[in-house]
Length: 128
Image 1 (cartoon, helix red, strand yellow):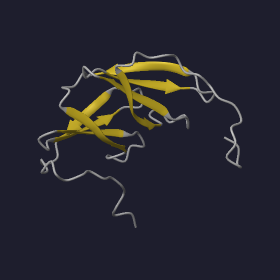
Image 2 (cartoon, helix red, strand yellow):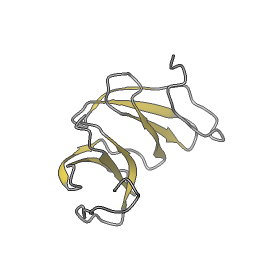
Image 3 (cartoon, one colour):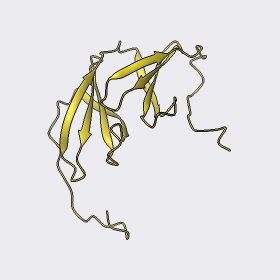
Image 4 (cartoon, helix red, strand yellow):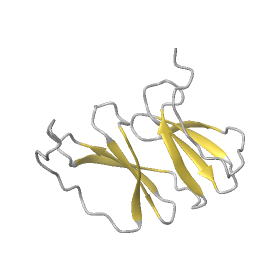
């Protein structure tokens, strides 16, 4: 985009099956280019590492999850400068995947369950 909001150019990433949805966009590999988390209707997950021209550089698959779990947020929860993934299921159970820059899961944390009527919001609330 240009500073006036007009389009400068566009890129057309590879076509995907309609069962796949974009779940989040974050820079996972610290190259200052947003990457894309895709998830399909069966619970398969992948990250596309993107080039600055809008084409896919590479991708990595990470563990398939039960379809009852959804990605609620992508934030750097452990301050390692790599976005992590907050998952939540329909019963209010939560899991945070602490990620590596190559798109693999380093470890995970399991925060306390939260009543499913509550919505999840993330930010650095104790920033001084």
